[in-house]
Amino acid sequence: MSDEDIRRVLGLLSQDDTLRAFASLVLGESDGLPPKTLHRLEAGGLAARDESGKWRAAPERFRELLRARAEPAEALSDEERVLRTFLVDGRLTTLAMRRDKRLVVLRYIAMVFEPGRRYAEKDVNVALRAFHDDHAALRRYLVDEELLSREGDVYWRSGGHVEI
Image: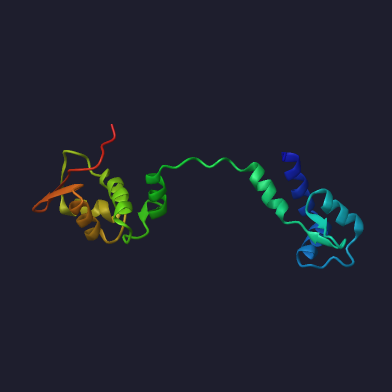
């Protein structure tokens, strides 16, 4: 498939007569359509004849063009896949997830906290609220999974990996 094929299809759909004819074919109505217009749609891959010789729309042409132009999907690690599933625009969609997936998300969130630095509980809450409104549950999960440690109202990062 070339750019010329895409231009041909778009050109056909930008003309009123061929657009109306294609719409009629999509609706299953081919009676009365000008043969010249049908042959133009056929040349662009947007129309075909079935076994009985009746004209039909060929919307599969759009899929063909899309597949031909699609970029190969980037390979995602399991962790990246989990993060894309549960984080949308940087916010958690849910806290209800299996423990193994929750650990991936919690390790990611823990990276917000600088190793060796002490944080007041209110600062931890502010940071966690950016990810989810239930910051208390997030804080509890981080402590339970030993990604954050706590003494009184002071927290510090105690687990997870550190990017250098």
